[in-house]
Image (cartoon, rainbow over the protein chains, first blue to last red):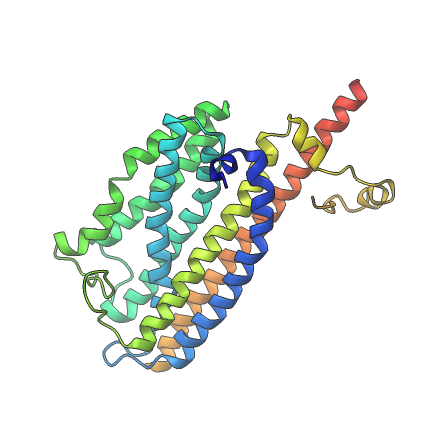
Length: 261
Length: 49
């Protein structure tokens, strides 16, 4: 099977449509399981009490914010070097979710910080570099929105992504490189986890849920972007069925109703 | 103290649910707009032809 053919929007659009419900179902199931383990099964922390349960959204969103940026930067390379249409659209599709994940990581950290550290915010290396990550996401979205020619916008956005990617290792290693108020990593690939097994299970379930959510939203958004970008092409015009006469008359009173291809 | 902790937890999870809901509403709106744009352009071309 030649996977490269899915780099064409025409081939990827129906594939994304077929995959979407599966990822959406996985998101719902994993979130329910993760919330049950995190909020009901996991024990109270002996130092932090109950408030540590914020980690079940804080840590997965922080991981996803960093990972989405890396994926966007990789797509940026494809956009700049090979000029593939789908890579630029995938970058655009991931950006709002990446920004949302960075924002979730920041405000859940602040809400966790108040009862734990006694303050909502400090200009600590980890917090500051994560705030910069949010600004990079917002800057990318503002840049591509400001340039009228979509191809030029994609290339400028890709360049910004590649410049900003240096921030990701700074976020990750900030708790090792500097003496920060933010705690060190509790989970690492090279060392045993520093938390109870049920806490770890809950966090991994919620992390998987965040992955599935990100893929679901990216697939959904990229389908809209493909329709928008390729709307002059014959295949898109044939794909989107004309509104039947009876539906068209009812749509006159309800402009939001559309038949879904 | 425990009650206060659960308030912090509820606020953190509550804001997240609201934001994710807004993201999905925006996604669905963008999809409807994209479909409408394709139909509008096709109808315009067929009228011109």
